[in-house]
Image (cartoon, rainbow, N blue to C red):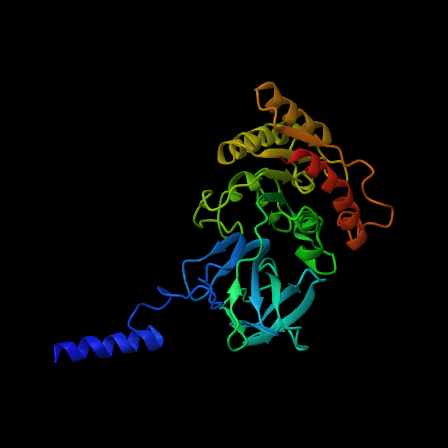
Length: 339
């Protein structure tokens, strides 16, 4: 009898794996969230092996797959963008359930996929939850070619892509990362400051170190999960409106650069002049202070004149043309900076 029970259990295990805790067993190539062929770039909550959640702007998944079609398993409504085989991103708005990314079937063979979800922040409350891929019968995922390095972009609504046509994926940071053929992150939310203020501006000096979108009280991010080759900082546009003095901004910038260096000992740190010039002198002085302390891998990026006259959607936020102009200037700087 005992031998029969063991045999039945073995058969059941091979048929469905239901004897193992959900999410504890996933086959490589099956498209489930824990499929190790899928690369999750940015800050993701992977604690629930059946549903991965992206944080901050521009987080994305990247994977190769075989077959002619690919679909997403989503929970509730969300806006997302998908790119197949390096083509332009297609928008999928308010989708849920099984989302067909290939209404027109592809040619048979190997393909690559990038999916990025709209950031859940401000008034937008979509359900950014990846529950897996649906592939053709007999198809499987494979590991997309490694990119080898990661560039982190730190900022506010400008770095999150507010007012660009497809938000984070048409933002200068995302575009620059793709042009570099590097992985990239956008640690940014609309309205963010560098410095904490008495009127409650969300500030990178405290919230950058958190995992889930800067929400107060959340877990600290585990910086061993990825290593940045470069960190590009674009901060200061909002601090002025919240009354941060130049002296305080400069001191906080020095502290921020110092703490970044502790997290990423070998990264190049690039401090950008804000596009409207706020705290330009203080930003440059903070870089010089770090250089004087012996950190020569910190540099100031003068963005004067980067934006064309028709490159803004309003008085502050770049439009698509503006973001492309920024990417065109920033990409060669990073190309020369990165090892």
